[in-house]
Image (cartoon, rainbow, N blue to C red; front, side, top):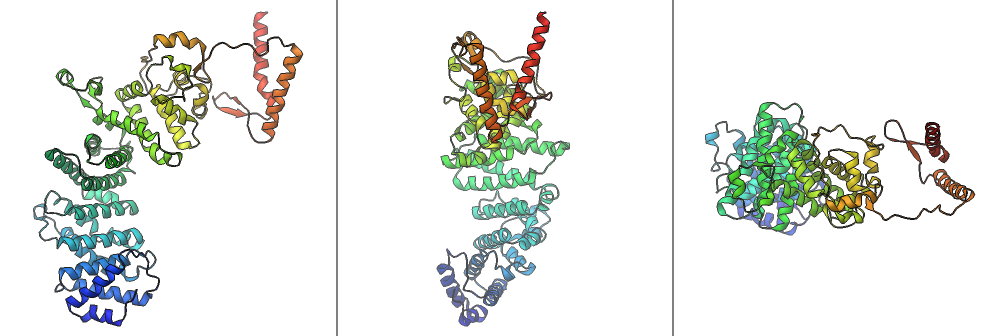
Amino acid sequence: MNIDDRCLRILNSGSDKEACSVLLDLTTKHAQTFSFPDLKLEAKQEFIASLQKRLENEQSSTQCHILALQMLRLFSREKDKLVNMTTEYSLGLIMKMAGLKHYAEQTNPECVTIQDGGNQDVVVEAQKCLCNLIFNSTQAQRICSKNGCVEGTIQRLKTYKDPALKFEIKFFDMRMLFLLTALCSDTRPKIRYELHGFTYLMEVVDLTLRDAESRNTGLVDQEVDLICEILKILFNLTVTVDKNTLDEEEEAHFMRLVSVLRDLLMVKTLSKDRQEELTSHTVNLLTNIPRDCYEELLIPLNEMDIEGMENKEVEYDGRNMEAIILLLNFLFSRLDRPYKSLKESLTPILHCLCEMCRANRSIRKFCRARVLPPLKDEVKKLPEEGESFRNRLCKLLTSPITEVKDLVADFLFVMCKESVQRMVKYTGYGNCAGLLANRGLLLGGKSDGNYSSNSDDSETEEYSHLKESVNPVTGRYETEKSNPFEGMSDEQKEYEAMKLVNAMDKLQRGGIIQPSVVGPDGRPQPVEHILELTENMNIEDQTEGTSED
């Protein structure tokens, strides 16, 4: 970058027209530049100081202010060379240009208007500078969390209903608030409790949804961008909340939030890709919701509502299950993702559905009807073979991605009311052995989940005819096979058994396998030698022999 004495002289004492010409040339030339290695530190500091003087000069034109802020924004991209851009003075000046100082000083809600917030094009450029500086500098984060930036942004939220306010101002307000809540945990309780930002943010989402509804169209891309930023802020505000110690007011806020999230799940966007993005952020936030609040996803229906419904499939147990259907469809659509992105794609939605099914009986039963319908002649195939919801989830029970494997197993187990017998029936013992081992249930039984004792596991006629020949290990129907030991002498049987023992011993000594027995706690316990696996068999044989006598 060529910044010579002439440039500095023009910025410091030249006319507005001359300064604009110099700045326009520099910003155009370096619009895509993210580093200025040739610019010496002293020259950069002097140049930034000259830009700040131009911003302080109220006689300078709007165009000059915009170009000066654009130049500062280009410099703010350099994380290691922010020099005098992150001082309290510099940040306070940019904050003033962003209109935040004006709003932070307003104490009367009725006086909060956009008229005195400054030129909107200048405001947007200043906001971009602040976002870059907050992202790149811990010092800027610390200063902006205490100098009125947060208060000013929350105050400006109250003007968002004014159609004259530019979308870019709303968007960069939310981007800055997201960065501060993500990088400065101290701002979260201030926004949530002192400034009531939780309520104001939900109102902005609600207002945006009503606007789309009044137009009788889906959300446009700009509205999706704004809502997604707000959802990320709300996630940061709720991620550390203790869900077990909520007071009545906090619980009411969460209930209201869930109803807003339900509306977001059902709203349409003009772009299909943006629908996926909006649902993804909605699901992320749902993972922070206390269990008792998931009921708000369901809309109670009376008999007249049910009779007048065009799509009867969304009704279940006297409730509208459309939001749950959309969540299940979202999960199903993400099962096709490549392995590299499975963890990021699946863990939020799986966690969300697990919590919902544990908390709400109607949701659990509805999910089970969709994911684990009564078995028929599909038991002639392995549980992981096929394209049904059950097949595709069972395939992930042996995924190398631990987080995905565990959450899929948990989801299926919850839908089975945490019954080992039912889980084995739908997945096969081999597929769910990992879950059973982790929970100490290898010997069968039931977990400690709080479920009704009523059985909702109905068998079809096709399954009843096949179940006696279903191999519980594979979960598949198998025709009767001939005994491989038939026709062998005792010596031959013993020889084959010792071959197997030696092969397993070799694998154990090579560290390839670790043979185990099921301990008293229902979990696997390693054995030192392969022959220990036969001890329990010998004890059982002796017991049987004694009882016969």
